[in-house]
Image (cartoon, rainbow over all chains, first blue to last red; front, top):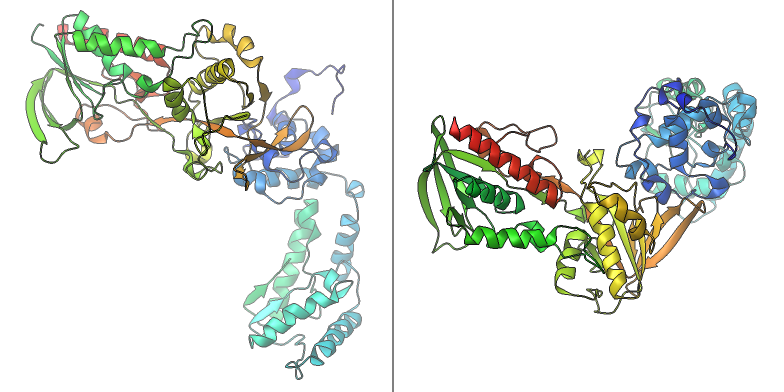
Length: 235
Length: 338
């Protein structure tokens, strides 16, 4: 972060200065187990220990402006091994959430805004969504043993509500068939909501708690509307 | 004063040193040791002298054992344990010792009175089998304690799996220490100095590459800081702890670690991996602790008192233990004198 000739005032290195943070990050003993186990260690010079150090030293701006929190995949291997129980993915999410929205890398913020506005990351209209699902259902019907397959959309009182990852109605429609065929073979009572069906929640990745709650809440609303008790949220 | 007897629980370096000091002060001691030999873990430690003595303290243990055996006012019960202890009055306890615990036909109980008890029951080495390093799964993953025992009898370290000479050895520090998930928040203190000394000893006798994975070197002991620059010279020092060990089809042990200097994640293969396991509290003695009014701290070690000595109060090395036993002996002497 700092090049070697930059003078650092060490009186400013204090975890208390990382004001946006409430938990016990100062507990890190810098053992490096997180960095050893991290599958992303070394990418863009990232390793989890450095992020925890930035936070422990109260370097909030440096952490927020750094690329590193966005290199992490939040797989959680690090915190699973951490001997001091530091919530490393929690730290990463918190730092991501502190970034200005227009500086969030890649398509994350665009997809999230589309989801908040239209109910799914692709801004896919309801008619198109239903058309794609029925198209897939028709393809399944052509297979032996699935002749009477129907895709149950908005079926009240079904046992399971299934959310859909947007890529499954975009580039990966073949993958929908596996799910559908398993339900069919298991004689399961299931359904898909025609509205707010989005199974991804990119607010989880951008650290945007408010948006995350909105998207989660919408799924709960669909469960209530359709009187369904079980949720299958594969993403 | 002459007839005062002190019961010492534990015949390790702490108990032996306390008995010797008490003996010099004219007090009679009875040592109860559960193993068949006295000397404890420290008696299994190898001398780590290379060209010159590195002050590891291993030889002192054997001097202590000899001295204790030669003393008339020290009696020793090995393979024995304290079965019962009752306080009769101030400075008087009735105790029952079970002898020959390991043999049903020779098992026997003896009862007598004592005037004070010294708890010197030592520590329990951390068992790393649940850590992701394959201990007890892969033969060539050993502990620092295993390595002590090997180096005590062998000049050359070989792989336990196939008896071949290792080309690369890794030491992993802090296994079971400084670990809040285990509620082991302490540093075990002895592992950095002893592991580095052992690594250096191995290098003196055989051609081998050694990598030392550590958090930060804990330099307890007044001589260690002078020694450290010399010790680390011949090793690759990596300041991060590896996350796991996997054995490949050729019996090589793969470690994945983050190389802080090159900022890269590295897979490297080793022939032997030594885990520096922590010192954990001896929790086996709670009934005695209650009977003599001692207190256990949040981590399971005993709070310091004049009746407690050595590593049962927390990690300490040989010289610190001997020092602690000296203080205890003097404390007991003053306590009984009054």
